Length: 571
Image (cartoon, rainbow, N blue to C red):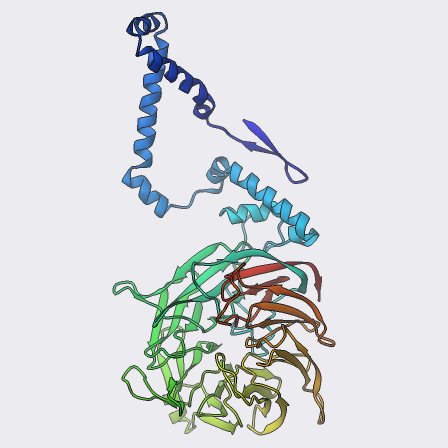
């Protein structure tokens, strides 16, 4: 046994060394001597008569080598390396102390670099040993997995779209773990709940695209599962996924849209949140780029139009016929479609509360809709229309819908995620949730495409011109703008922000995340989130940050999906 010393951690870590490994140099020397004597038969015969254990030992060692090589190369062992049964904690600990020791050293170095808070990064508040064990698949103590949430976890966490699940806002950020597959982009905002991080990816292979849905451990970044096939028999792969996943209130099911803007014939996807297996697929003639909303057992999503040509009219669905778009409602438990309602280009991410879905209508629509979510037969029995109200907007209302008390907030404007308008204009539209009457509007210098985050009567708006605006919703009239601040020069801010109340986390399309003081917009720090040497030429750093347990989770164009921790924090 050799003892490995790790300073200020466990004191001593035992590492067991195989006896055969320790005797290897001696056996090699003996084998070399034996080989040399083969050239001198007289000496060889004398040596064998006086020391018979030498040839016997060499022959035994040779047979052992043949046996070990045969075992390693056997088909059974190859299969075991591909699909290995989980080991018990005791067996793994006996076989893998070296790996644990290296993990401990790595964590101690990180603690020295990042400061005291880095030793409290595990989901259950564990120390460096807990994280080292978790990273290698062993838990230091049994942990319970929550199965019931207070409410569904939708895009940006909830209808207020703050992007904050729990914990304070970290400062002085440094990357903690990273998940990345070669050439994939992570444009969606991750969903963080129950100690898991759910995300989606895009792999571009023009004219096609491919996508995955995956689940990671929140504390370590370890991949729990990944799904990329619609049908295991036909091997049909998902198309690129821009939509952000939503988790049902019981924690059992993950719902996400599929397809990019030019894609037709895409599905709304429901997966088992624990295994990644497909629960159901509901096909649409178009694509679903917005993120689904969930209330109870109902998921609602918008299927956006495919506009082509100079007139930007909808064309090219799965049948080659123009389709303006639709909103669909599906029962999560069994995948039964409850309704389809025509809405022009509903690329917006909806919110559902009290049996009513609120969603924006984009190009060729320019409106905000409130729709009842009950099944068609139930509305017919009650003699109710699906449409509660429709409010016109001066521009396409493509931004996600936010609820702020009795207000429905929607961002709109000229321009989209790819193209800026030569004469930009934007607007925050505030609508009475019950009546559909417009309460007020705030003119902005460019389009609002990301989610508006609301907390304590303050709305944080990402603007396509590269700024973030803070707007006071509580003022009766007059100028509601509290401050405005740029993230990284004129680089567009296309994604929503995370808003803790005291800090704002905003991302520019060229791959920089800035932390702003929520009191006046002062920039406190800025972090490059794309890969080293890979600036992200497509400008698709459009994932919005999510905060959970004092950590920041964010996707990027070239830097993967990362978890950041900080030396300091602010409530």
